[in-house]
Amino acid sequence: MSVTVYGIPNCGTVKKAQKWLEQRGTNYSFTDYKKAGANPDRLKEWADQVGWEALLNTRGTTFRKLDEANRTNIDEGKAILLMATHPSLIKRPVLELDDGSILVGFDKPMWDEFL
Image (tube, rainbow, N blue to C red; front, top):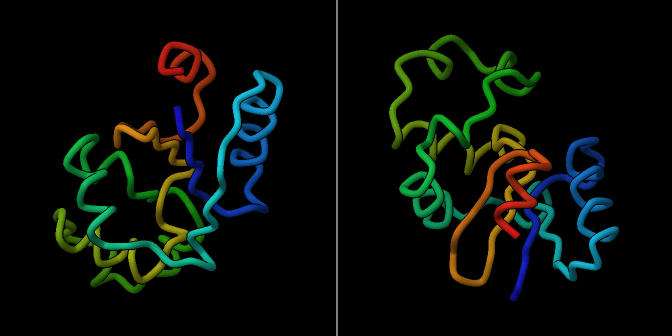
């Protein structure tokens, strides 16, 4: 089983998730989507699975710093464009298995069940 963690390396939640994976002996690769960018096609695939609302981080500083026009009337297309343009708007971490299934955010019981 191939596991990829998407996130930002200095994010506390991403660090907790990585530590949890390491303690379980789960090998994973890490993609820093702040450096690598966020592929809109992949974001669309993720949104199709979990809904764009689950992916878009509206609680963070990046969202609060957006102008009013970008913070309102958000639909899937606008959310994907915003996340592709500002990867910090993607909730972290996103865990993706080789079959394409994903988990968004770090929730130990859910990750235990998923893995």
